[in-house]
Amino acid sequence: MRVMSRSAFLLATACGLVIAGIVHIATVLAIPRFSEGDAFTRARASETLDHPLRIHGLAGGPPAAGGAWLPNPDPAVSVGVCSYDLDDGPMRVSAQSGSLMLSVSMHSRRGAFYAVTDQAAVRGGLDLVVMTRAQYDEALANDVAGEVTRDVRIIAPARRGFAVVRVIAALPSERAAADAAVQAVSCTIDSPAEPTGDEAGSGKS
Image 1 (cartoon, rainbow, N blue to C red):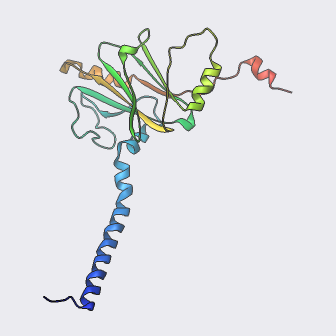
Image 2 (tube, one colour; image 1 turned 90 degrees about the horizontal axis):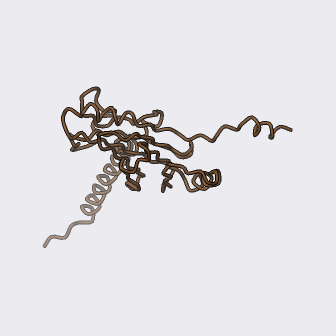
Image 3 (cartoon, rainbow, N blue to C red; image 1 turned 45 degrees about the horizontal axis):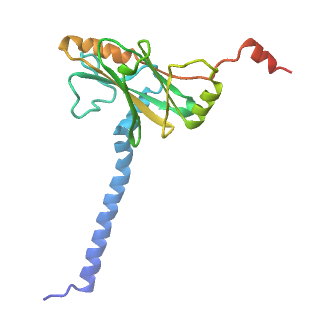
């Protein structure tokens, strides 16, 4: 049985370290490319929009931004996404119920944390407000006693995330309507209420 010489052992060890180093460097350099391709990062392109960013349409038109997001998209479901950063304020997702089934789900990096369909609409409208715990407490403090709000307030587990809007087209003739229903959803930032004239005047010295 031959015993590996000391020089051969050192050479093999050095080669192994070099290969490991090359693999490590290649992995580090590839991280930005992979991270830019994940759904969470790609959804941020919708932060400047007031409606969902189209990621899978049914009736043709321009391709989804950034290419196909879904490996096996459902041919009967139109999909859009609204990204949010709660440092800018609570995000409000508003939709009107119609003849086509609509659903909205909220996602953080860890996955979905809330989902609802238009069956929960109040008087034909669905208003979801995603917020932090502090923003939720502030909203409760500002509620008028005896006044009922139809807002569905959702406390997010993280400040960044996105909403996914889906509309089902049961028939081929409904595909264009499904795409339009996704784009008709509103995604906006809830800004603090503007002070009234009396409130503004009371702050003057």
